[in-house]
Image (cartoon, rainbow, N blue to C red; front, side, top):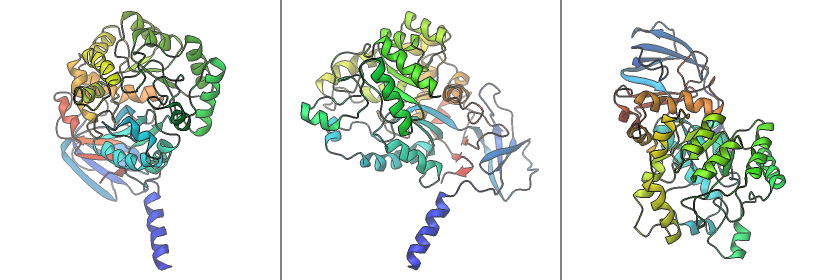
Amino acid sequence: MLRCLLFASAALSLAAPASAATQAIIVGNLIPDAATGPTGPAVILVEDGRIKDIAKGINNPFQADSVVDLSTKTLVPGLIDLHVHLTGDPGDDFRDEAVNPDEWGVVMGVKNAALTVKAGFTTVREAGSAQNTAFVLRRGTAEGRIIGPRIIAAGPALSIVGGHGDVSGFRNDVIATLESGYTCTGPVECAEKVRKSSRAGADVIKITATGGVLSQQGRGLEAHFTSEEMLSITNTAHSLGLKVMAHAHGARGIEAASAAGIDSIEHGTFADEAALKVMKAKGTALVPTLMALEGVRARLGKGIYTPTVEVKAKQAVEAAGRQVRRAKAMGVTVAFGTDAGVFEHGRNGSEFALLVNAGMTPTEALASATTVAAKTLGLENEIGRIAIGYSADLVAVNENPLTNISTLEKAEWVMVRGRIIP
């Protein structure tokens, strides 16, 4: 009986919200946001999970319950990855979905959530999972029961029958058993599936607007949903206060999704001038996920992918990075996302150098993962900056990322919602 009581007490302690005890964090160089740039030494006062005050200089003026000395480090806002798949790892055999129960995704997610937050990513958008796995992880990190970032979760993606996001590559009776229940045909059914996602607890609606690289459907990478279906999805989601993120590779699928008012295009691999023109006009953000294609590149020709996937993967890898250059030239918003799960979790920070190589400045790249990503989520008054009243999501690195962007590949210290990540 005593053992049970002790276990219950420990569980309640772990689940408790961030303590009201104050913490003073001394930093050698503060970057409150990318646009401001470095402002020099500072002391951050944190209370009840939020930034209560900020003082310039290295001397601590605050009475605090504890002090963290990061006087040799640069402090940046917690990083945001808008496209991850915490419940999977790269190179998994597609047939595993016919063998592993959905619950296995939670086990993988606990592991990957810890890797992700320790890499400095304090908020992620989970871009497609089994029905409840991402929602369970979301609750676990929010309550402090497991180590991980703030999770904005989509749940299962909406797809066309037989398209990317639907179950494929199996015999029909197996497909009937495994299907997610989120395929739709026609505007009415698609609106219904958005409402179903909302009812289940989705924070955002994810759709697969075009074919995909790693699914077993072999119909290329162009548009899947009709324009009428995408418009129905967008209007329904927006009426419920939800944004829509669209996996989209092919140019005409990107153009149609943007014209329908979808909020962000994920990947955007073959975006051309016509597609980007519509994105600019509609205010649609591009989330390019360049690390995903690096993960794919590393696995090409090694017998990991089926012949169906190999064909599409080679097409996508060859085009990697062009969409970022074109988007920047046309003034389209570029927001940070990696598609972690296609490559190893915890390597999310390697996306920064790829963005810079594709033509973004270090300041633009850092903003894409902080202020721009926060605005894309509709959380620009909560995260993405180090400012009074904001969530205490903080990351310390060794150097100034605006002069050495690769320093963001390794976080030296991380705080999420006022909790220090061990």
